Image (cartoon, rainbow, N blue to C red):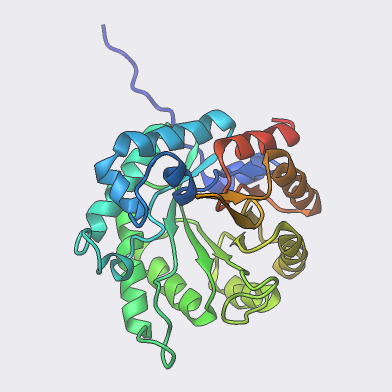
Length: 299
């Protein structure tokens, strides 16, 4: 007896945005890995090979918490970030592996977002990063993530406008997947390079991105101000917001984030009420934080 083929298709980012008022992304990667036993100083990407079961465990915990979108463990997986460690020369392999594990956890009903972080280098004349090097590095990573089967790409925690523009150029040269660009305003309401949310958004929008936003950052009070400014500048373009769980504090031998699940959820729900279309958490945010956001959103 022949069986009909499985025709279930993963929904698209654009399709889900049309269907739902808000999408829920996952929480932190690195800080959760540290809680799960990752050795200090180890790059999270190392766990893709050393502890893939723990990578899957965290992805699945976010699925169980209600996340619609899982980000790959590739924040530091450009060739520029990998070149000093044991994964040097393995950019494609790292990104393919991360996409595979995230897809395994997400199944066909949730989206996998390929994470691309900052290069870790300052641009000329302050550092060594130039246009061609940046474009090539981001193109290489985006190509591998797309090959691995992600549904969208997220350029996140960016602080330099020139690097953002160069990264978008490289990513778009390698993939037609929807692209989210998210800046980190870790100096309060400015990035490390002094960039305002308005300047960031108005420069990035003409490049044809699927969403713009903010992630990481500093306190939730600062994020409140950033979100208001991003929403005002974004117009009809969807806004993506993933704040830290407040400010980290050292308690004994541990780093503790000040915002518990309920506090983070309270702020995130306000962002949705203001018009944010995709929300989640960044550093310090656990599956419990994401579950609290889901509950507060009536999921």
